[in-house]
Image 1 (tube, rainbow, N blue to C red):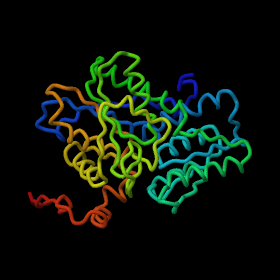
Image 2: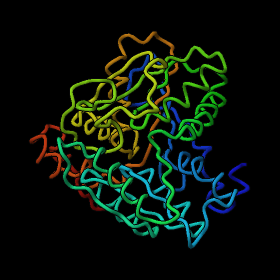
Image 3: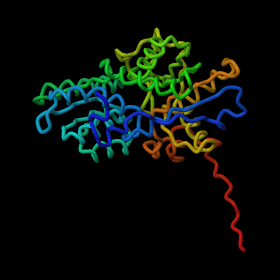
Image 4: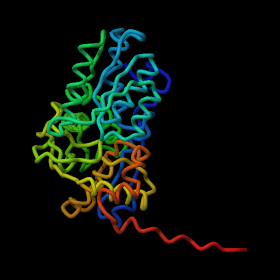
Length: 333
């Protein structure tokens, strides 16, 4: 079933632009492109995932407006994608989020009509585990509840075969490196499947958060949502990865701000993570290589964190880049 058969705003999911980044890595010996998933109608790559996980159940009649309720654990973007689809079809939705989810994301979920539960504490700081436990409780309590389970649902990964197809078609089949931030592992797995099935030589670089447990690093405190996890999701396949790069919260902040200053691109933390990861590997990437960075979402959901000078000072101190820029002098004519 195509998105066109679903109609309305849902027909605009996918087909996002791929642009060249010309300044943030200048002078460049490599070509760098960004896949701007913020141009999906819900503002992120997770619109693709949400549609892929729900559309067949909507088409088959398993999900019924006024009776069925969708329940999901989310750090934000997947919830917004689900909320958009549920609002379109008149389905009830409950999103279980945690304290790292931004206030703007919670407001967006509620604006779409979703019920939101916020987990603020968890044993061992395992907020994901606490979210999943609450989802299981709700599914057991609510009649006709459906849990898409983005962390284990193979339809999550299947959605991103199309994402990779769009990239490859745009670049006439030649993609040397793909940098993909990892949370559920669905985007990475789907892109890898397309790469393998079509015999491409693309090297897949997995970008994870410092403190995340996805690739068995010691778990720690993370401030930014969007990439990383307190445990490895079932969809994560380490065998498809050419290299793993860990990026700290501060490195994400600096990369995001560099993108605004040099490319006029306002993007989220996981997008900044891919920029930082490429910066770390740049000296080892052969000249002339084509590198694609998957930018999962927009920066407007991070205005109170990444793009807030007061928030950055509170967590990282008074950084040099926070110094005010000189303003042009007023002139008279």
